[in-house]
Amino acid sequence: MILLQRHRDEQAAERAFARNLRSEGGWVFTSPVGAPVNPNTDYHQWKALLKKAGVRNGRLHDARHSAATFLLVLGVPERTVMSIMGWSTTAMAARYQHVTDPIRRGVAERIDGLLWDVDDSNGSVAKPPGRTNETKLRPRRRAAPLGGDRPGAGVGRLPW
Image (cartoon, rainbow, N blue to C red; front, side, top):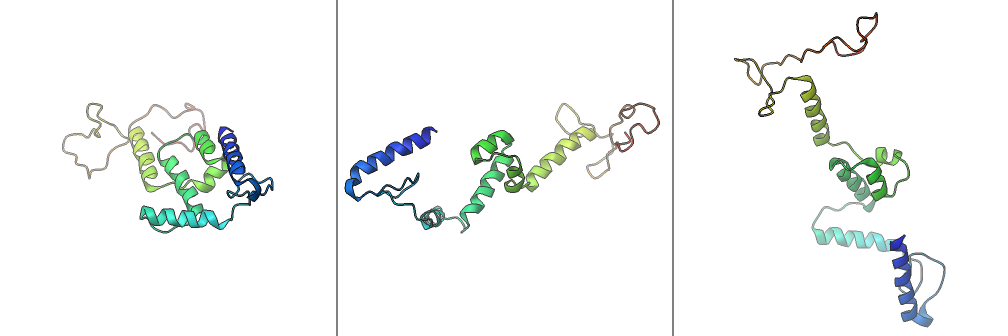
């Protein structure tokens, strides 16, 4: 809201400067003389920005996907991403955020830490003497599956 108020104040200054040249049409975003902003303006400014930055050519809309995905990679909470991106529903996160290979690897490493024994002193996987990194590791043994010994208990769960 503060940004819109500041924008309104800037328009008031432009209005005073333009005097008789300014037309009032009730637009929120206008040219310096009060006319509606040309839709091509954003396009041309975006293309100039890409060229100046020396990055590959891309659509402005693609930058929204990139920004949303960067926020996902950084681990920014979804509610914060929604606020930054201007979304009102979490469905937009599914549309704009793309799960990347580093995110998948991070999840796999976290699950790996849950399943396999880890030496707490240095974070390496604890292996019996004579085993190498290529040797398959045995999963951690767990207590009885959740649900105890009842018939059907633990169905669909990991056996350890």
